[in-house]
Amino acid sequence: MKTSAYVKELQAQSVEQLQAQLVDAKKELFNLRFQNATNQLDNTARIKEVRKNIARIQTVITAKAAE
Image (cartoon, rainbow, N blue to C red; front, side, top):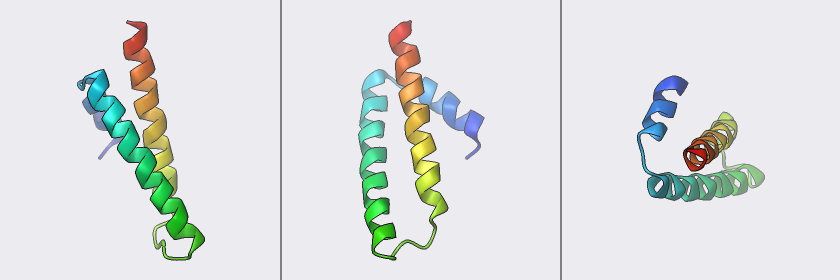
């Protein structure tokens, strides 16, 4: 999914949905880190992608809180 489309999708969601998505992304990042530490992770770029998605979600939450 393209970044701009992903951000627009995030902006259309409620804060509660974003919070739930943030928790899921953090859990995924936690699991990816463990897989990486045990050399089970094939796609290490996924860690970077998830970290950036977490930042995007947090940015949208902050923007909605400022409204």
